[in-house]
Image 1: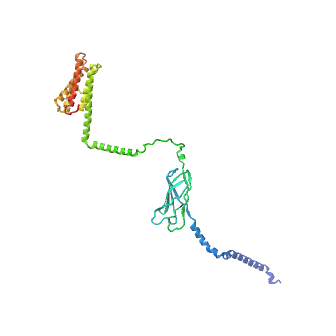
Image 2: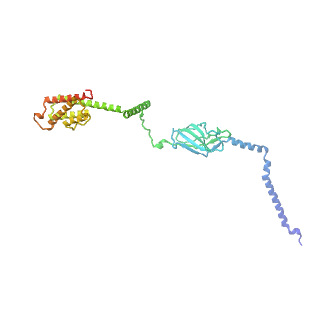
Length: 358
């Protein structure tokens, strides 16, 4: 009969293999997790924290997530422009109660920076740059330090502004040649003279308008003077034409002489009394004169008007009667007498109630 030990040889060999494998795995885990703690020296563990703080203090914080606007939208070389950048920051960049501060300008190639301002924009901040570009194309702007006014923050906060593009005015306008020089619209140094003359002219115009509107007596006086000048001119024209007819060397036909005398008389009395006597009959001239003067005329004026009416009657007879005899023609003596009567009547009318100078 076989013994007990010979009946279970495989089970005892399997138990030995499991123990070996367990011991091997335990040794590997011990080497991986326990030995590193003992291998680290005390000096290395103490210097790790200060190195992290130094890295935070020395390395600047760059803000790149922002909104940028360039005013105006199209910028050319030599134009004044403004760059506005709105951004947010976890730290307080401006002291309490301060709304804006000026930042020291930076030197940028091909870009003249006139002013840089940091302002509060609600819960955010806005930086404004006033500058002038001097080249075409892209201009790179270096980071701008915006934390120089911070009170409770030691790190450096820089703003990384994207590059800007300056357009070419040649491509924008399409012009490829320089325009010819033009003369100045105003002579240099005469601007203030023109302004002064304009002001004086406006003042004089206002004064004249006020005088013409408000002062009726002045307007009446002006009308009287103008009427007198016109009357005097008509009076002297009548005398000149009458004397010219008496001294004319060229023979003038009787009907032409009568038409000229009739026309001159009617033009003169129409101007003298401001009434149209051009279509009145000789008798109508006397009646209209009496109506216009309401009978308040001197004896001399009445005789003068009657004399002019008689001359008109004689001239109309010669013009329209068709009589070719002695009654239908003028002798030289009659022509002289008619011209003398017309001049004397005009002188009498001018020396009457108006006392006009003759």
